Amino acid sequence: MAQKPNSFVHVEIHSNAPEKTKSFLRDVFDWKWQDMPEMNYSMFEAPSAPGGGLQKAENLPAGVLDYILCEDIDGTLKKIQSSGGAVVMPKAEIPGMGWFAVFQDPTGITLALYENAPQPRAARAQRRARRATKSAKKSATKGRKRGRRSR
View 1: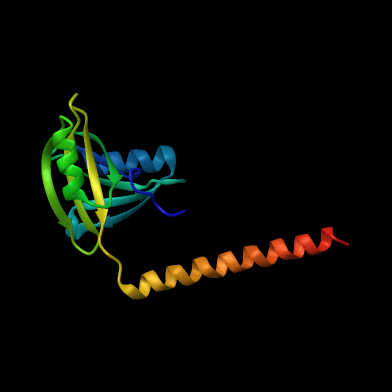
View 2: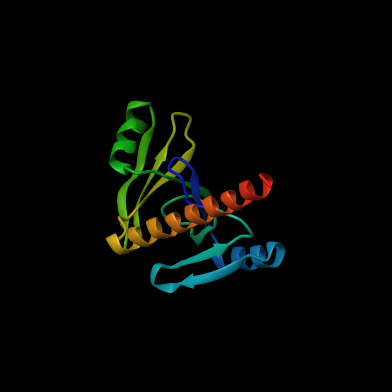
């Protein structure tokens, strides 16, 4: 299922002891982990979306940071500020993936934004082709069902 803007799409755990946290979550919930040493980060896969990551608590306190998908971080940060929120970390690039920013709502709750990097034209064309194929299959299935009913 495609991720939709304004939905939670990533959960990030900030821990004072990442390896201990990772071991605990693996043992208790059977989460699968993929280490990304170049980023000092580990990605986890839970049984259903969203997945997320784990890192050492450095720039933010230990806890959980939820990421909300948006189509325009700059515009969304302006809305956040004009609605009484505050930018904690400005827009920054996640190489090869997109951008993120961290903010607080007027009550002090900390959340993050995520914007995907534009996909190459070939990838977009492949997605459109898959959707067209699925649509054609659905139409064909409906036609066969209607044909059976009229007999």
